[in-house]
Length: 386
Image 1 (cartoon, rainbow, N blue to C red):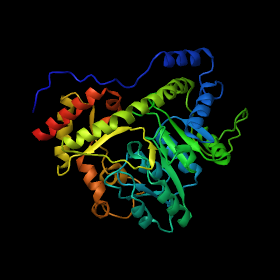
Image 2 (tube, one colour):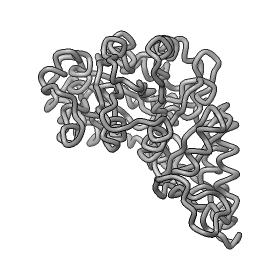
Image 3 (cartoon, rainbow, N blue to C red):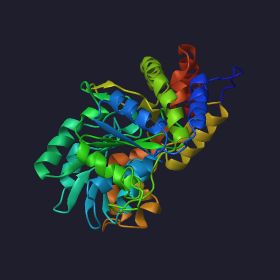
Image 4 (cartoon, rainbow, N blue to C red):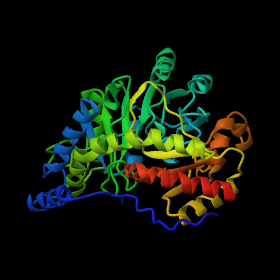
């Protein structure tokens, strides 16, 4: 493999500054550190909802909890089926399975890595209650086609928008697409407080139910422990919210930079012999959570070794998610009545992506144009050596 003398000093992540420090001090000195007594969570929710065009936002402890809360508000129950993409992070299916509902994996598009609407339509049964599109790496799924499928079948959509902060589909932001959306603020996400999540609600009724259930079923102002519903404690603390307010203030500029860098890096990666994740022209604001690409023809073990090579060359490289049905976790609770081989046979694109795909952390796309060339040179050298 070629030697690269020049160190690749890509921007660090998370990024922070005086805004986060001031927010933490503000939360500290207000004297109330949980959402029921402070103002940081309430203010963050209003700012986050407005940014995404949603009537309401509810801040929660994690992105996984955001998905669980969304499904609970939607009324998902044991035995129900929820259609999910076969290629996604495991939380998409586990959130479904935690309710005793069945997560039904369907194939994804080989270009965008998003759920294939035709595969989703084919999987609808009389037990299907919802479809969960995942906006993979910030590319919004085909919400037009999925919305029609859901409307025709009388089922719901719930967006797993953990990668899609600031994204826009045909001029509509995530909160303007008419369905509940769950988002994540885990340490690697586009804005972060280490952990955290949020649920965007399209109407007051679902928001109020979400509020109850995220606070152990306890109404606002309750002093006599009259828990109105079942639920859990998914409340975000004031310190996390103060950091997220600062993170939100810098998000737009970071998206602008990543949108400027991706066309260049994508072209250079293609010239290096790999296949970058594709875009959808209807996505008019793409936040680029990951810089993803496939190396056609390699095995999963070869891909994993290639990731090690890229890391050794100074790149923030990762193996992609495993297809969910190729994890032990998927089969532990409420799995469909199929074998791994049966699901794999109807998910050929997910099989390829499972073995061939790699992602570079989104901080890569905050680098300079010169660094995009350096990144591509290292990818080319590592691929050629393999």
